[in-house]
Amino acid sequence: MPFALRRRQFLAALPALASLPRMARAEAPELTFDQLYGGYSALGLTFSDKVKLLDGQSVRIRGFMAPPLKAEAQFFVLTRVPMALCPFCSTDADWPDNIVVVYLEHRQTFVQPNRTIEVTGRLEHGSWVDPDTGFVSQLRLRDASFGLV
Image 1 (spheres, rainbow, N blue to C red):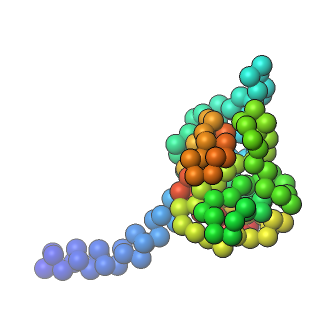
Image 2 (tube, one colour):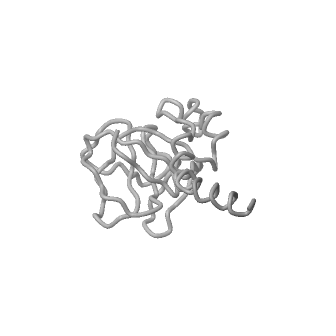
């Protein structure tokens, strides 16, 4: 009856297997706004070694949701401090050092800009223009989700 035993063990393990994506996100390395940039050069902000190391990996960061431009948007801007307006800039030369663009994996209900949230997503760095909106970003989290802290 070894097959029945294995089957029972597998069925008993299913609840634990179902929680693996949540556990993986909870274990993503933390990144803070102070760790995003390593300094300034003649060309502007330079990314920190930590950002370069974590590029392409899942990270988590805490901050505030800037008011979205549209209620149905699947992205928002995460800021170090609460903001009343969306902080997108016209060029990456003007890019502030205290924001990250967040592209959600699934639509979520946006929260008030004075509520602290923790976002988990795949980090990307470097200048990029969103083809749908024309917005320029330096730092992005892709396939992200967030929750209140």
